[in-house]
Image (cartoon, rainbow, N blue to C red; front, side, top):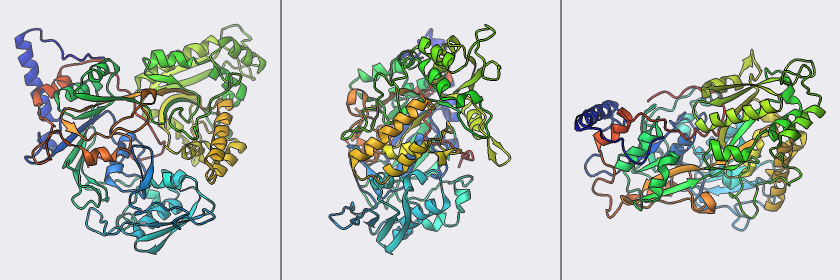
Length: 628
């Protein structure tokens, strides 16, 4: 990885050559968006432009298809939601003008009917009025069309009715404990646009092309794949008027280049700073920094599908999976693969994110599948997997040597390091391993393999990353039997887990709900179908000297402190409150067009920078997002 200092100048002639090349590269669009790409080199006079650097292109600007964190960040600014998750962790009204309660009559005594008042005077970005019709349409569109990107959130809702232009009635089959959380994660869509799109197309092929119509504080007006997303302030926004006139989300393929651009002011904030350069920002008072994790976990999935599958059938054996889990040293993974910027993992619900109650379940010492190669060997012996011919590889029940395909994605170097370590440990206990590093799209293709119309996953094991919902009761249903072929990556089925998933949705008592979610984690952990490897920290830095108004998340930071100031979908306040330091917003802004220096990293500093990772909230068959 690179260092905090730019590449040294060996002599003046070389320096001049590098600067000339760098300037040319920026003009061609390798650094900041170029005039040729439809973007000015610097903010127009009198406008305030915020530039954010990240390592992940939005995978799709259509909310019914996309799943990447960058897509969710865009949607949080493009659209409004019924309710909102605030930086302090509380939930309040957004498009709803009031938070419904039993006391104010918004929730029926049996908890099955929610009556929600909608703000009046709100308009879509094309000038059409936003009414209760749009809210009801969005929810019913998801429910009736079974649009799986949001079906976890609408679980338990039977229908949504329009009471009057400013009121909706949400009718549930049973009480819904996560209604506020669900309402904070479902973007309200314009009926007059989406009613012309069939639900099947909405979640497979429909492309949202800029200018995209929403009702949020900013609007997507330009997207260049692999380059940037440009959003402009919505002058008709119903809420607080931002000082920022436009936001440029700049995509980088090299974390060190992005870091250099932050240092010289070509971007104002960056997500995914390399570890080697992070300490320099942390020690510089001009920058704010965050080491954070909010519900993100790194995992190994094992294909244990009964029925049609091209996975190795030995993975259907619980004892073999438990032996594999015991042959993974999570502390070593955190130290070596993640460079100490991770905590050892246990379950899909992160520790330290929730309180009163804490929804994370921690195995007792006698339950823990702790690293123990000898115990793993004994477990395999007892299950009947022995090395009969003495070649170092155990045989399955038919006498064939056991070899598992283990994959890691090209997008995440820590996964590649973890894969090498895990392969070594598994080989030590007599399991053959074919370890490969594949493009993430290739892994997806194997996961989504169909033989005719029959889902037939074609993989044994792969390592990846995901981000759970902020309501843990919306994360645990991923692994129900009904989600095999969608979110349930290990293709695991457990009747008790399915029952508890259904029951926790309507458990209005938080402690009772927590006990159900604890038990679900315990069942999954004991079956060892989806070993969680680590809870990695992400590294973020922002310009604190040039900007005022950054709003840190009240939790999620390392050691329990404040979390990030953007890239969480909960920090919309950052974009609304940001203003140039010492200015009122009527003169430019801190973003600087330092052309030659900004591009120097792109053009000539060739380093092995680690692209931290691409978090994946969703898996799904999808059409690649087109440039627009």
